Length: 132
Image 1 (tube, rainbow, N blue to C red):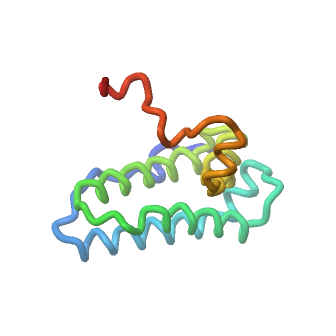
Image 2 (tube, rainbow, N blue to C red):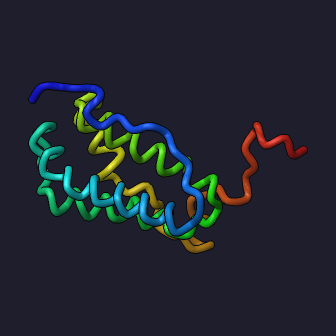
């Protein structure tokens, strides 16, 4: 397949209200779902398109709680950019596996599990937090 960088390019636009933003999110989701078989074939992934569609749905569900209009616009812009980069083969298969198929959620650990490990990561402040 020939790479045509402008085939997925879109003008940046801002939604006037939440209903329009919702429609744009649905359109982006549909574009990702429709592109799943093409992504699997372009990158020769060892997963089925249905597995890729499931991971796409999980990524969209992670941001379901976002209600800020500007945050939704940023997520839409990033999602469209990711779709364009993916379909134009500007990524490596490892990027697809890492971004789409890897679950970034750490399993929930109880207090005793943290205690046995010898650390409590939730209580440790990062060095650059500015809190003294």
